[in-house]
Image (cartoon, rainbow, N blue to C red; front, side):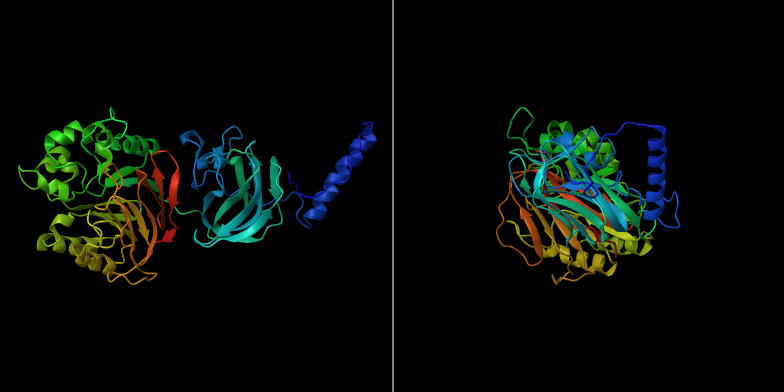
Length: 447
């Protein structure tokens, strides 16, 4: 158990009025010495309470990372059991100077861990290191870290279980003023409803739908191939509607190539099922705003349609929001079986020229994230971040040819993207249907 500093041996003495007075005087004197010229001044405030938290894994959905920052000593975060390393991190909302970190461990504690800080959520600097932890309360004081993100990175468990923290308390001062406003969460997935139901244990889309509903985002968006195989209206009603259809009113869909296979006509079943939700402006492409974000939902089956291209240019020219995201089916870059799809390059050029930040795609049935890049695939800080999230329920595709700038690839575990937006930033997690975080993206600032 780590405390502020080593203390002299404690002695028990008879309690007399003179001793009580002496104790009070000593306490006041100690405060004056600790804070000369600031009698009664407060220590640095708690700056982590209720802030967005992520973790490497969770034991189950009742032990999410946010439980370590909710101020309730009875709730806790717990990682998956039996593996190292594991971590939990918090986004403080702005650059901060951190002076103290207090950790309240559950019985599943860390024998060895680091407290680290980061400006961008990607590069981490150690603030404190423990190599002989014994649980209880670890109170790290006198720290001088500066950054926006703080994490506890466990490297050796003290038990055969996982890591579990009742509370992670970060104290310090926010340098950038109040935290960013307009925060909201979105759940996204592509390639969703195979022709199966929850009666089959191998059917994945009921599981991804249940996960998406537990996250309870501001809204949901899809990246195409919502219903297999030919996207008939009858299939939408028999399969998609029983799972992802539960939150259809909060969904912003786009079509994929399977939506074009309906023999009744291209996108017939898709259009009939979603109606004005998918056609709010009378076309299978549209835009909408949330907070300081402008979203464009596009039909990549018809990127050769001059009307859609002109609409996109006009829409982006009218946009007054700082941050821009787009979602459509066919990825310009992918390491999966379909690979790169050049049909999307002209749209990327328009988005890049408008300083767009994020593109979400499906089509290949895996998860993949790319570093910021331009339409020609050159890594650049002012580039677009692309995420492939085609693991909503269709059979997974293997990774085949790893593309330049690809930072992480996962094929096999079904799941959804949990995207967290503020007025100036975005980050995300790929969450599996087992509730565990399979990957976390950096926190990016909008262009």
